[in-house]
Amino acid sequence: MLNKNILIRKAHYQDIADIGALDALVFHENAWSTENFTRELSLHFSRLFVAGIDKQFAGFILAWYIADEIQLLRIAVVPQFQRHKIGTMLVQHLINHADNQKKIVLEVADTNSSAINFYTSLGFYSVGFRKDYYRFDNAILMEKIIHHEN
Image 1 (cartoon, rainbow, N blue to C red):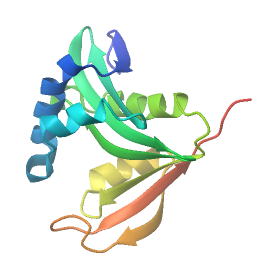
Image 2 (image 1 turned 120 degrees about the vertical axis):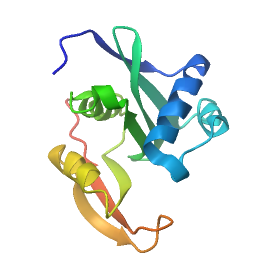
Image 3 (image 1 turned 180 degrees about the vertical axis):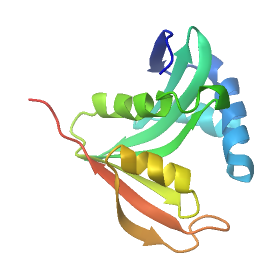
């Protein structure tokens, strides 16, 4: 774990360039445009959070909070900060900001073993399969039940 000050906060318009650049680096031909991320900031059901380490951009997570579930759409961590629990902290942040949501759902390419292992380590499990969901890959549907503290 990094021995630095890690802060996760709601994204602002001035974060969009960093978010877009990281998304392009991580997702290549499946990257979103900066316009896509800018639009997400105006949607009432969309949550876009950024992680910073000592005021340096470290990653982001994007999810939709709809009805009783959180749909995790994007997550990425700057390569130099990967394997330092930033992704774990971002997912936990989604859970901490759940209202009436009972689960988190996502799709992941069936060829992306590192992402599948990451989500499995956080308690996600496979609930389905979508053939040809991505351009060249199938998708595994995963979910994690949220246990609210009362």
